[in-house]
Length: 184
Image (cartoon, rainbow, N blue to C red; front, side):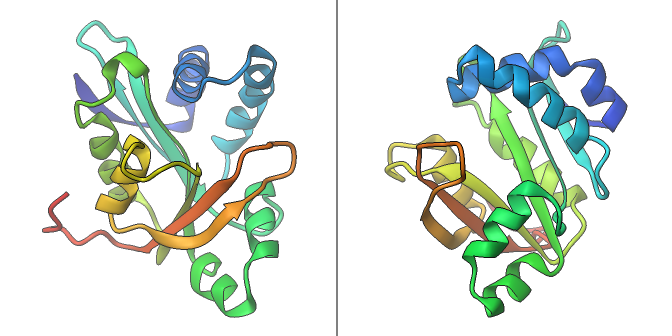
């Protein structure tokens, strides 16, 4: 497997594969995935966009991640901003790289792909902080939670509900840049 940086055009060329990996990793229904396709296409054109992909030796997509500069007027940013106290808004959203998606196909999970993707993405990121959201789950049972904690992410919001999703989410953050010598 090889990890490669992706441009917006790279991501858009492989959008069918991206949506498949996303759906498989998250267990989402087909009707939700159809809507996500449009969101991903919009995200790829946002300022500060950075993306990575993990490809198998035969070119299949095993995982991907992307993010961009978080800004007012973006749905996720505005939802989180509305839930934060003024001081937390300035701390976390003033100069923030938002990790929007980070997924590994289920058969490829458990081999360090997510960690390599996250490290590469955060190394490319611009900003003083980074935020992401993840479904609430027991931390010891969730690979995603263990990964984010290993990377130094701390709680920013817990038990947060985004409109249109019945699940509770956590919003996690950390300062950037990643220390070059940080062991993960």
